[in-house]
Length: 72
Length: 511
Image (cartoon, rainbow over all chains, first blue to last red):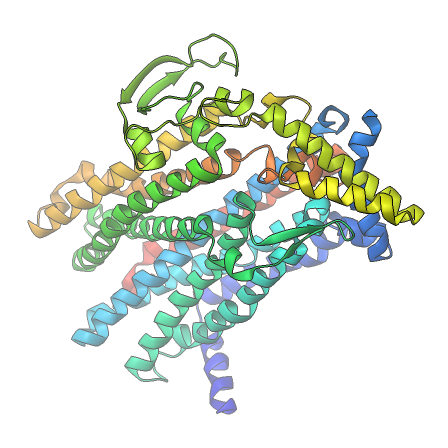
């Protein structure tokens, strides 16, 4: 069963015509997304700026409550 | 509060999200609809055994594959943006969105991915019926993916089944079923998916019309059109029906959105529906100016659509902003007072917890919980901030409805001319058919503008404005990513269009 499943994919990919161009585009796109955009332009703000969940909670709560405190 | 926030950052973050979502939505509805159309074609092939239907199925399946491949993972960028630009929001909704999105990932994605290979590579390896089953499973799986995203979106429009945890600053799920079966989420899902079926049908109409204009693949094009126009007509009628249901829910849970859709400033009983109108752009809530330069109104229809009662009162923007005691409508100003109490209670709770004062913490928590339904209003500075940008919503709504009506007529005319075997002689109509796909895209994007701009200023309806949902970032950082995406998306779109156009140009013979 595993062998036939393997050959389903293997032969399928080998016989593709348009599919090869598509796969190139997909791979380039995924590379740009995960190796460039995610790493250099889209760091997770809370994950990179705070070490613990307690600090993250404190930051978010400050954002939720600070504006009013500023006005007092 | 809002003037203390860097609005430039919020607006660039909103623009980036809108750009990404609109780009993503070029591909998604085509995947949702074309998967079913391929399943219909293949069902006819299996039923009749006619090899022409097999050739036809394989051609449309190739176009489906191209669209799927280019569109795949464009939604992941939205997730990146949540973590970077909307970190407060992401933190707060993590518990709510985690479950639906995990279900999507595990159930729908694997269902889709497993049968996808059989659908594309298994023509000569599995039986006809097993292949057909795979094609149907891809269609079902694709559409199941949409369920959970739209449940999440529906929750943002109508947040139910949750409780805010002030210790973790999170909305926590208390009733999964309430969230999953929210009437807003369900009406949202059926409206969006049926609109996707309509959009995919227009794609088939556009390509097939082009073949007829070029006098190529005539029989192939007519067969494709017969199925696509029938599916498209049924889908477009269903879109109208579900759109009505969608507006009914908006009237109940997002009355400001409905008022903006209609340019209705002063509530009426009975209220008429504006069939067409020219808005007065200088009109502001609370002033004496006329909202319209001219308008054509259908009496009582808005009352019927909003409340299922032709004599009922439909609140306008002024009623919602300033309140209307006669109709028992609390105004935004009063909600702001309660919202500020909620924010104050939350702040005092945080301070008391830190200092270990349990008594003060208990009192602060009670104050917060008594007013937490109005939390978001606590961040507004003046009541008019609760009003979205009316002209964009008003005109987007009319573009969507106008095009939706046009598509019903288009499918009917196509089917009639197909029946009379006269379609290929109608060059002008075929040219309209070719352009109809682009019009379908415009209608889709206009619909999303109504849904998303219509709920501004809220990231989560009534609870969290976008100005508080954001991350503490500089506007410049977000601005750079906006233009980077604009270039990237344009390049990818050109690549897809070139591949798609090449395959269409080759036609079914090239399979």
